[in-house]
Image (cartoon, rainbow, N blue to C red):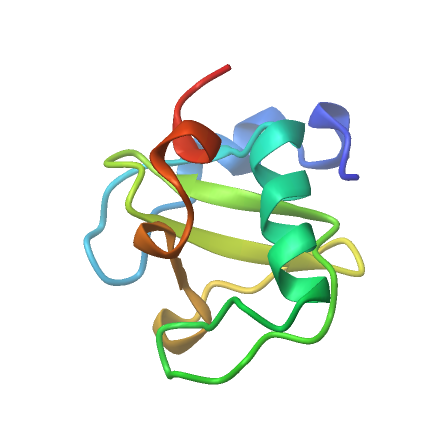
Length: 97
């Protein structure tokens, strides 16, 4: 998992969703764990419709909690097509814990 300290707080404050231009925040471990469980079962797709195969180190969550941008190998992937729409996960896994 990506630690909260892995992304410079000043950089995180500047990052926005490329589609909505809304702020992003680090996703909690519970959400990343739920996403990784579905990735392992090949049940999670990105916005482009591709089945995800690589587990996430972390993620950047849109402020509306509808989308998650993956962090893989410590690198945030801020491409609209790579966004994971969270409607694919049960609401209990998306809600703040």
